[in-house]
Image (cartoon, rainbow, N blue to C red):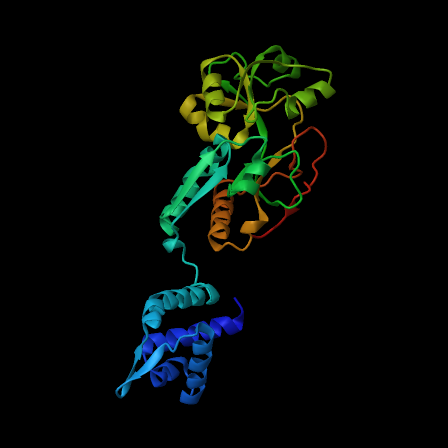
Length: 325
């Protein structure tokens, strides 16, 4: 719609609502001659007199009466679109966000995120689904956020480091190795549990072992952190996992944390979103909630943390990284 068309529509709305040229002029802040000119233009455009003299006043023609509510609704909607949005208020937010993340994120950050949202935006709902290799496609198609470690992301994606973590070895309290300093020989001789959230065999630990000419036996591979930790608490398997989630659940499951017998680099979890949400105030608020939760629950940082999967040196992904948003 051209600006001249909207002006004409607003003139028509004022005339139909007021039922007089004088009243419409006052409503629009115009002079009576200017509004009379506007009425003439509308009459010409619609090929209808719209307002006709009836005694000392004017009445709407049948067509004008039929258009009255439609024109008013159209003008009101157009004005709402053109007017600035009301100030953003998290407490008024009613929205469902979809987030791709592992159960690690829920264990480490879930309760803090929940507390912050309950206090500031109780109308917000979160729907978590597991990470997959198709996370970038899901973000393009409508998912709001993903949290994880990625081998590479499309260049348009926005990322921000959320937290860092390091690896520890977890065993049950009564494990034969629970009170010892673990050696590399003992490490490779024991059967292992592997956490493979994306369902792929091998991983960073296996790459590092291979560089040293060693290989471990993965007896059980599971997609989630909680079942892996529980299985470790009930068996003699070794589990190499993230320190933050291990420390969170070790007291509940009767687990003991050991230092790995080889150097393993720490890693960083990234918050990832599609740029179409950059200016979305509700989305920006949710991103800030996760950032604040990570600062509270996992504020200490590990130097040299890897931002990508694989055994090579840490590299920045191709996605655009941001320190804000």
